[in-house]
Length: 299
Image 1 (cartoon, rainbow, N blue to C red):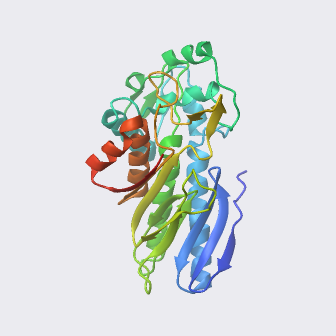
Image 2: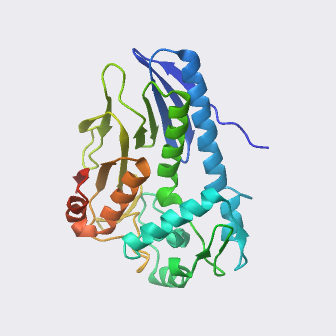
Image 3: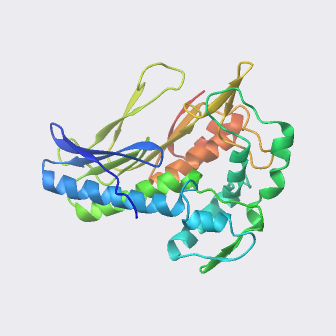
């Protein structure tokens, strides 16, 4: 039996805010206007969709699709259209990044635990996992996917942003005349401009500062996503190891910014560009300038 996620609904001066926890993040749905019944319906729909995606694709839950794929031992696993689309997007990410964005690299979590400690894995631990990484070895079509024995997939690099976009789409269908902001742990999508103000205000944290938010943005519509090491890192001998790993070496990317935030049309695009920028290391800002997108970068 699936347990339903609980949520709270808070009335503010000119909008409602639904709160719940999912995908290891605090989640909120901001609904413009003062219709409590509609706000409750929208928040419940958002919770349901978020829970559906998490239960299907989380690598931490037993007996779901991801577990069947990751324990298939070289045998084909049946997939649906949604999974095929996600896999196709992951393939595009791999091609665009010259192999640096590789969802088969999730197996490295067996060695790395980014918990703020100084527990750096040994070279031997990492080396034995490298042969189990390589997107070109994954075979899939619209009906099935086949992983070599020992391989695993991890949608963590795109899953939360995908959920944000899916939830935002449902919110817009339920409320096509008013703005809704979907925020899952800082990954954001706004459906349309607000009726009066025209925008929502969003704070961006500087990971080098103790303040909650150092820059406040106005966002009328579109996506916003942040990638960085503010909460997921290791620290040893005054060297900080961020959680963005190079699948070719098994080690964190060197000289990457502490944090990158990108604005784009959709949250999943913003998240991809933010992560691709970090994967460029010292060339992160040069990469972002080439993309001609709005971004905020902290080193």
